[in-house]
Length: 239
Image 1 (cartoon, rainbow, N blue to C red):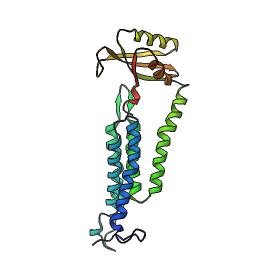
Image 2 (cartoon, rainbow, N blue to C red):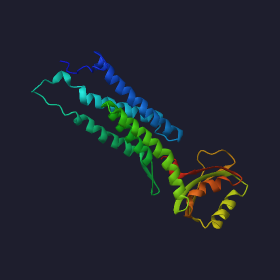
Image 3 (cartoon, helix red, strand yellow):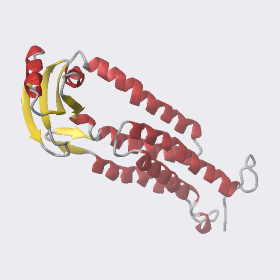
Image 4 (spheres, rainbow, N blue to C red):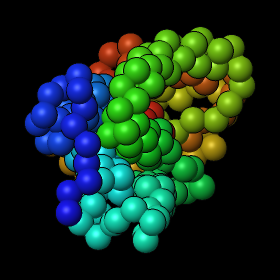
């Protein structure tokens, strides 16, 4: 027995149309999250976010409407939150797989949070709370861009520790110049490792662990050194 009721605003075929609209809304909103993650160069990007958001929306719709054939008034009471609540647990396992720890540093927290956020957006869209779902997408971009710029500004004047992957041309005295800059800016070199992985012939890759004042500027300072090919903060690799 089918117990879904047609929405008078959408006509007699609302049983399929309304829920399809909610599912597509979840897909569209989480696509925006995925695009931002892809632009930032993160691994869990467009495909991951849209799959998570759309799947969460589908599970939410199943939880709300998928048991109509076994329900009848006065016999079985359905709690629509019982299936939906498991989405949170499931996304927790997925997020745990994204977060990794290397040499005492935690990576992937932002990406894991974005996946969890996409699931929440999908759930909200599936329940018809499109305004709230859209608001969260807008707030995501505020967090991703405005807050990111604010963090860099605040960190620029603070002491701290950072790890940088630096690729430079061999035989040009670049490392000597980098060490001279560290001394000039009172940056303490607490660790340096050579890495021959995924670099072109004639280039050297090192990982430097630095501490000191205005650590947020170290990446840009080193990138301006002649002979430096690329500088990447280790914490940005899997964020």
